[in-house]
Length: 224
Ligand code: GLN
Image (cartoon, rainbow, N blue to C red; front, side, top):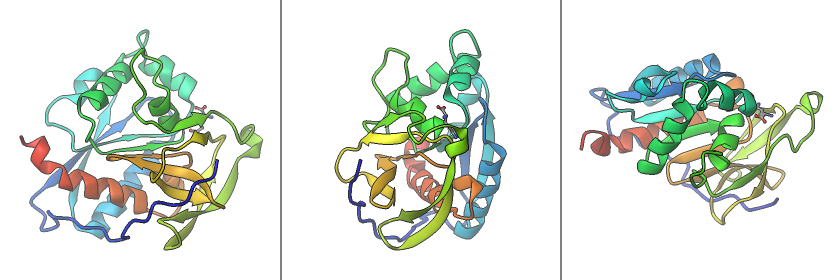
């Protein structure tokens, strides 16, 4: 579907850039593209002058103290992720969904399969994001492609990987933050950034910077 890009300022502000804050980030380790997110978040943190601690989230206990400022739900294969993290697996996925419903302002970066899970949690609760996706709608693995993604309207362009990617079928107005030829490929709902592609496999760190910015701004809630 086609939507116009939401206009954002393009400015990234870090209220805690002086360095005293350590942003606690939960990296969900179900399956798929994870290590590339570590590199992307580290380089985003360096650019922003903030400190991060990346915590691997494998079990429900990993979601506990210290409280997370933000979470990354990597891409991969959602069917496998549901098995690994579902009721017959670690159970972490259900706990993540509960946490995101309970704390809707938590900054999240979801890529590809991560976006599928948020749009269609399949745990009998409501979706975490309102945007709807169609799995594998670009075709099979062999139909994967690189595309120039327009981020924040015309401001930045970068080549990103669409790997057996989902496609948005419905995006509520004003939520698109990334597009390819006018088609939404990334949305932001509250602090949830949900993308159908893999920015961590390209040179852009702009989405990881957005996540850190939202996480730093949310520090008051974390310490409430
Ligand atoms: N096709 C995958 C799925 O349905 C998503 C692909 C990806 O995350 N790169 O889960």
